[in-house]
Amino acid sequence: MNEQENTFRILTEEPLLVTSFWCRFGWHNWTKYKEPEKVREKYDDYVIQQRRCAACNTYNRKRLYKL
Image (tube, rainbow, N blue to C red):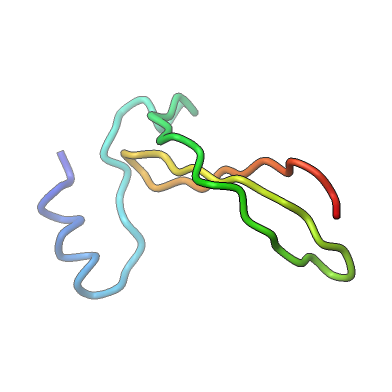
């Protein structure tokens, strides 16, 4: 669908177009969660895991616990 256009957008550092019809409805093709990592938000430290949609690169994360 938008693969050729997205190639040009990557090279010009523009946001990518949605390549899956279902992403428009919120049905994403998620990758596996990455390894847990420690992040600092304001004054607190958290351990989070993140994943992305393989089609539209939408970011999703879950907070595992507070340090």
